[in-house]
Length: 366
Image (tube, rainbow, N blue to C red):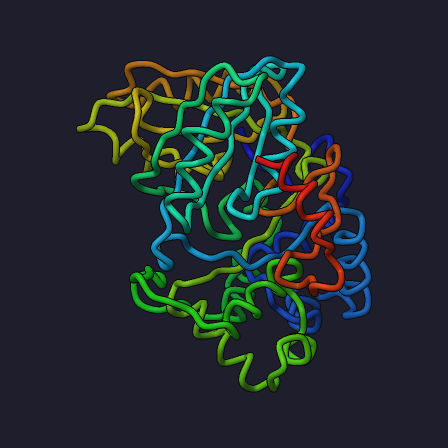
């Protein structure tokens, strides 16, 4: 396995890939800064980036670290009848506390994550709402104990060789700095202005500070300091969402049962692999789950034999082939592209949402 500058099956050319990698390394780097590093005209960088975003291939978003806000995080497996998978997955994707949803095994299994800010709301979904849905056969929630990789724009390193080390180092200097220990958060709270800033940047993480200030009723200087503090403190981070069409790879979910003595070493080995963007230790019979990005089944076989095979302590594993993504890093997915971001509930005025509509939607949503 190994990345190339222009991945097979991807519709990105070499320059698109270099720009996307630059955005991964520094999500809010200005077009001028990227142009200076890549040696390309600023107008070309701006035009290419806007096309990538408009075509649903790449999106920069802001996300919050659930630990910082005292939220619990779950990875949930839902076994269901295939004919009901689309409806269940769509209802889950409509929830603000669910940031990614995928359908696996020809529709027999849905896997999603749940960030439960309200423990009661999360338990209601897992113990009552989902089990009562007609297509659902069983629900297996697993609490996330430790994240080995996941929660950074460079989680997927398949394009690590798209830029030279000198270029990568130059872009790293333009990033908003994080605090000690990589900005590892302590439980804290955020105010209404912080939430408004996060809300805007969740839809477009590259919104200019001038536009951001206008949106939240502040000044560019103040919102700049607020954003820098959110990142430095570890409360929030910028993520880069990449569509399947841009990656040219498919995601395979892996559930592992690992002897406790080898759990940390296994997680760290997976996190170090460029094809693995997500790996966490969880509760349950399978105590680790990860995803691996591969071109085809031959590459998946090589991953199983050459990467998983030599690792000590793995007593069993399960591979789930992806059927479709429904939501990814907070972005709804349409086919192999990212759908346009939707306006969050907090951005809709009462006059824009009638009680009758709210009642109808609440009956159909999970």
